[in-house]
Image (cartoon, rainbow, N blue to C red; front, top):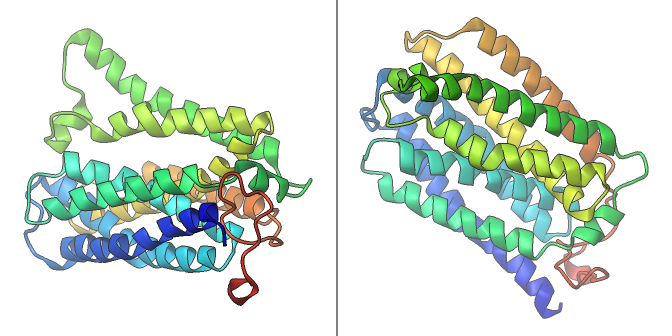
Length: 291
């Protein structure tokens, strides 16, 4: 195995501390009474997200890392997508949740997952992954879906932020959450939605970058929407107002996202091995570790 290959697989080792930190953070949120010191609505949302993180995200992260280390390209994209979810989630926890005993866990999770994601992306051979997608890959469909998704949520968030900014008022969502600002709006409009838009354009042009990012972002969207649905359920169980139309809307988005994800990733050929580090397009993992 050459140095680039070792570098690519080396980032997978960060999965172990990330998994341990996830278990502590999400498990603490669920099982430690009174851990969260936020408004009742935000507490219910945090517990709902912790449930998805513990039951779905954590095992997916560990399984993805294990299979990626054994040469699965789909697992490599899944691993990147889960890391994207973790960075997004624990940026919101580190900056948006009132200080509690797990604050340093949130910070450590944000740091470890950010560096693992950067390292994983930098050591990925974009061209090699693109070449493994079949001619039947729904490039146009996924590109349109990601672009429409980004435009939809830009319009939704701006419809609240722009009028409040012009009127010099505080948006209702900020008042309801009891936070200085709406951190979801910040993360979405500054980071996630631009990433979806740029990936949509790159994929439409059939550029290598778009093929990898589309797979990772579809994974991330499925997890994020799952967390939102869990939040709504938890809010309802806690006696908080759970808006039924939101359940319907995000239920449709979940079905569409998971359908797109399966349709897209099933066209990634299983032939070939390893995460294909940059500069090693034709690198082959030793047989003892191959599939």
